[in-house]
Image (cartoon, rainbow, N blue to C red; front, side):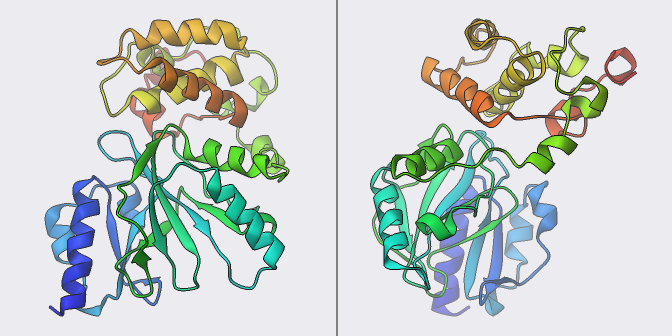
Length: 298
């Protein structure tokens, strides 16, 4: 193996041991099929058998949590072919972000790499306004020492409660108008796939999956359970935020260990701001499903 490939492998192992799946690339293109690793954890043998001798880079799959419930993501500062005022606006946004590991990209831009307790979407809508994108769910993020990429500092990956919320809030501070949730998506995505229940407060019995969420969970799943439960209370039952806070505090007592007050507040804030909706095919709700005893599914 060439020295360059050995460096790639060492960096890949660093991310792998943090709990993230690694993809090999050449010229920014994946060298192998990778969609399966969105849902499955790579085994050490899977990583070893990748075509290392053909690779000039590595990428991390975003949107898949590690065992601690953390999601890898990046804020992409892209300066290529953009007006100076747009690039400068992007620089102002970056000044308001928490410092983290920063890497230079081949085009002279930057990747700010984070770990987020809340799954971030991929957002490119503000590229032409502020030279920034969020690389999140369903995307690959190429990292150093891939060809053309290099670290600009020695920082570790900073953990944030909600990278998407942080990104959007930072854009707001420089005057960027934030778009609402895509209307077409909102119209087709409804709670528990019941279009007849959409748009009105649900007052029926809680489905079995929600009852299981209410029992609490262990470290590594608390944020995933929490965002679904808070969204259910706020966006399906339309319960007032103050009461939701009390309900979530009661739920948190069952967690081992409980989340901090700040983490709990961030979950509620994220569910309220983004209007998250979950259906029966959601992996976590589906795993807790007891369809025979579900009034909503009948």
